[in-house]
Amino acid sequence: MTTSDTRHTHTTLISIVAPFYNEAEGIDYFRDAILAVVEGIADAAFEIVCVDDGSKDSTLQQLIALSTSDPRFRVLELTRNFGKEAALTAGIDFARGDAVIPIDSDLQDPPELIPVLIEEWRKGAEVVLARRADRGTDSFLKRKSAEMFYSFHNRLSSVKIPQNVGDFRLMDRVAVDALKSLPERQRFMKGLFAWIGYKTVVVDYVRKPRAAGETKFSGWKLWNFALEGITSFSTAPLRVWTYIGGLGALLTVTYAIAIILRTLIHGVDVPGYASLLVAVLFFGSLQLISVGLLGEYIGRIYLETKQRPTYLIRREYGAVDES
Ligand code: UDP
Ligand code: MG
Image (cartoon, rainbow, N blue to C red; front, side):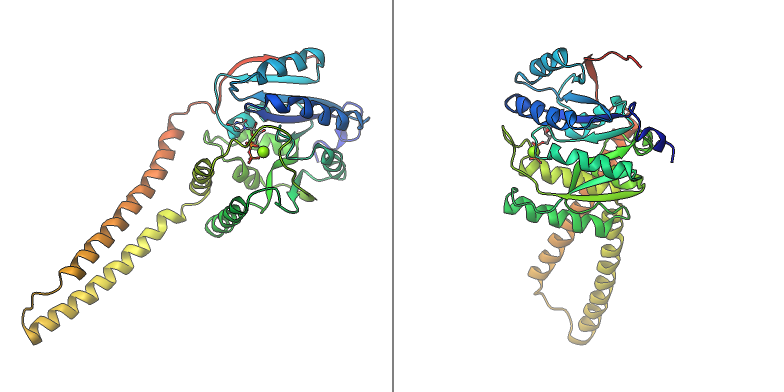
């Protein structure tokens, strides 16, 4: 193992990475909770990489103040709101630790679990997953739809995303470097995390309600997120149309033969408008759906070929490299 030598020494650096989008009300709770944990771990140094994802409230000002008073807090200011996936990517790219722990800034991922993650890492795991033992704090609808998404996704895609595991986890430097080497710009982190593999250990926890503020993910945003996940990691939705088309063609030929035979035996008859109309409309909509699906993938190809960066950084605040 490449980094096991740094896991037990005083020079071990652990990076905690947290994305912030309009979290001004929660920053004090976040600081207190993180510091309580960090101070309890004597045999490692910490840096807390806070990514401001284009917040419109006082989040950035508060984060800057925090990093001025405590150099362990580093702040990355993105030029606008790039979304959580991009903010997390930025934070992970800038993290310098031997291990990196992404965590939600609203404290829904319990910082108290961090010592447990670190302990599993020191025992040799390269990735330590934090799994929600129950999702009681999420609404029934969110729970059900998440469950449906995971089972649908995992049935279609060869990369299986573990159920009830979010971005909260610990990754060893080797896993982080592997993640950083993946070239795609549209980053569906849950999928990428699963794709890299590595020796993984799972730790259970209970998910709490937000410390302050409210969720940034509406139903519509989650739906698009799910589509993104599926189209990033599976081409089954593209392939299925070949089979549906083939089946349709087979049925149509059978039907055509039946009509020819009937016409030969009984002569021409006029009725049949309704069934014609149904068939035309049905296949018309099938075509629209499949064109839409193609569009979904072509759109992704288009976005990737532009090779635009995942995020842009306006400024970095806090600890300048002393190593
Ligand atoms: N977040 C972000 N950019 C966004 C939306 C959210 O950086 O565009 C951050 C947010 O500040 C929080 C985390 O991502 O730390 C999770 O967001 P949220 O709590 O709204 O999602 P939920 O927990 O409801 O799924
Ligand atoms: Mg949350």
